[in-house]
Amino acid sequence: MSLHRLLLVEDDAEMAAMLAAYLQRQGFHVTTAGSRTSALTALAGARVDLILLDVSLGDDDGVAVCAEIRQAQDVPIIMVSALSADHQRMAGYEVGADDYIAKPFNPDLLLARIRAVLRRAGRAPSLTHRRRDAVLRFAGWTYDARHDEVTAPGGWQVSLSGRETALLRVFLANPLIPLSREEIAAALDDDEAAEGRAIDVLVGRLRHKTDAGLIRTERGTGYILAAEVLRD
Amino acid sequence: MSLHRLLLVEDDAEMAAMLAAYLQRQGFHVTTAGSRTSALTALAGARVDLILLDVSLGDDDGVAVCAEIRQAQDVPIIMVSALSADHQRMAGYEVGADDYIAKPFNPDLLLARIRAVLRRAGRAPSLTHRRRDAVLRFAGWTYDARHDEVTAPGGWQVSLSGRETALLRVFLANPLIPLSREEIAAALDDDEAAEGRAIDVLVGRLRHKTDAGLIRTERGTGYILAAEVLRD
DNA sequence: GGCCTTGCGTAACAGTTTGTAACATGACGT
DNA sequence: ACGTCATGTTACAAACTGTTACGCAAGGCC
Image (cartoon, rainbow over all chains, first blue to last red; front, side, top):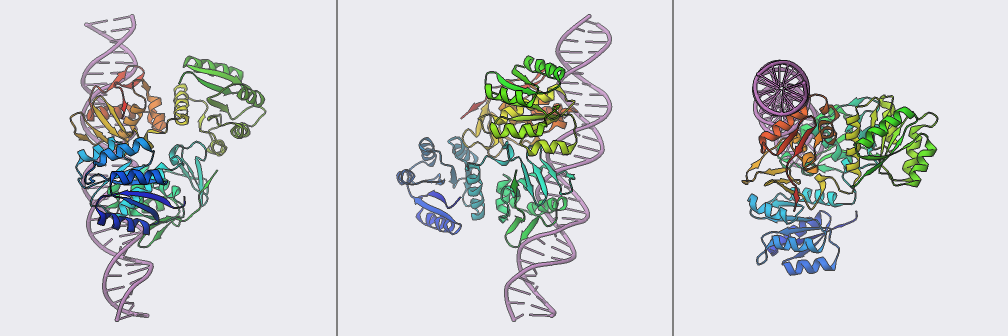
């Protein structure tokens, strides 16, 4: 994985600086560009793993820039839009953005989105549709991705609800690393889930059906799957 | 697509002949092999898109054969097992089978499984996690795969339940071709759904929320999405 | 240590989703 | 036309899911 390289295209210099600083603290390599031209230059000059693109660039039209980039390179793009109107969003979509987020946004949420997009864009196909490696083992448990079957160490099969299975997959895809509620929500493709305490309750239910100790709490942070995951 | 080539490895000659005839009628090119050796020979000699492998080969151990094939080539395998005991099933899994089915099986279900595996094994990544082409249009409607948003021709957004969305995706992945209930169930990764009339009711609900005419009934067969699907 | 603040676990509740069963409707063959 | 069978539709029950409220536990602070 090493360091992911982000290109931040944002014409508001102050905003750009703040964001860049924040993202750097979070472990990304960040390049900033203030205009369409410099963005394209930066893209040509160095490897970029993901572009954060402000739709409301002063002179240029962010949507057009997005399309332009898309034609040139296959880099994931997250559009940042000040107007959260749906129409605007859709315009971003149709041009090929991988995700969008409306200003003002929660930094954690942005982070979660970035990770989610990077994960999806990565080489590894999504857990669900792999052919080999469809059976995962962790702490004596077994998860079969093909039919969503979970087997306890004793051989007993436990039945999880759809949501519980989805949560388990999130943990299995990120073993031994702490996940914030925002990240979990993003991975579940459900931003609203980060609002209330739905995630906590969900984790509780999953714990109840599996081993209580499997998912540990990182106080103040989130949850972590306390087991290595082996692929067959 | 053209003709998919199946290799049927089955030592019961009568069963093999019946199955082969059935599958040929369904539009597959079928080769049969009665033993481990002839299976490997057949594999070496011609392109094979999918292997149907009986676990209970007379002399040989189907599981071992599966592993052997896996090492040699990256061909999807569906294991057919007479013993539906879970343990046996799992043995098939761990060795890398893409799916399994227990004898005696419903021919339609087998067919659905075959199609599902072929679909997953195909080049096209699953609809859900594509980056481009995430917005599909059909008959004036729009489906955005990234956030599961469905928009009516007038621009109104309709909210579908999880199950309804999944069904819509199945239809969108197979536009203009009739889908049997078994195929739909298999695509939904839910074999039980083929039992009762869950699919009918589900289709009804989806129809209700979209255009009544979008999904047509093929009497005696199943359902069909009566619209072309355009990718942006 | 004791107290207080804050975060987390969980039980109870309500809204939603989903499958089943039963009945209604419609299509097809005779 | 009539009967039969497949599909449409509705009502209901069960399961699922998020919210809220309350209690407990973990740290911080004195």
